[in-house]
Amino acid sequence: MDKYTKLKFILGSTIEDAVKQLLEYRKQGKLACCDFNGTTLFSDTVTMDDAYMQITGKTKYEFDNQISERTREFERQEREHKEKIPELTELWRSKGKEVLPEDRWELWDKIVPIRLDDLYQGMELGSCLEIVSILNNNGSLDEAKVKIESQGHSGMSYGLVCSMVKEFSDRGEEFVNYVR
Image 1: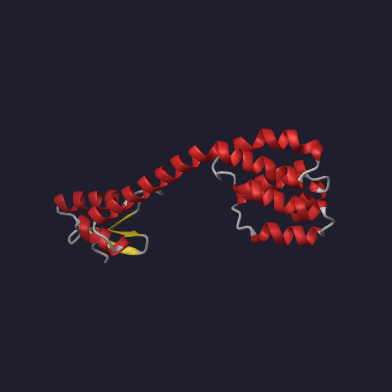
Image 2: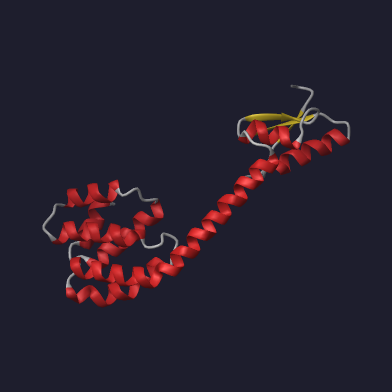
C-alpha cells in the first residue's frame, strides 16, 4: 500500500467524485487509493459500478434510480400534506381548545398553520399538547419530562416543543428549566 498515494476527500464528496479522481490518477499512470466510508478504492482497479457496489451494494444506475424514487416519494408526500393543511388546521385548532386555557387560543390558532407548513409538518403540535395536558392537569415535572423524552425529538424539534410549552402552559417556564 506504500506505493499508492493516499487521497483524502472533503466532507460531502460523492462516490462519483472519488472514482473520477482515482481514474484521473490511473490516466496519468499513477497509483492512488482512498478510503470512502470504510471501503478502500484503488486507482488501478476501480470502476464506477464496482465502487458503488462495494459501498452501497448497488450499481450506480440502481443507486441513482433509488435516489430518484425516494425524491419522487418525498415530493408526493409533501404535496399531499400541503393539500391537507386547511383540514389539519381546523383539526389542530380544535384539539388546542380541548387542552389549552381560553386565553391561549388566539395564539394557538395563529401558529397552527405556520407549524403545519414547516419542516416537521405539525408533529410538534401534538407533542406540545401532550406535555401541556400533563402540566395543566397537575402532572409532575418528571412525568412531563418522561413524555418529551419519549417523543423522539431531534435537538431542533426538542427546542421547538419546549418553546411552545413555555408559551402555552402556566407551568411552561418551570418545565423548560427542569428539562434543560
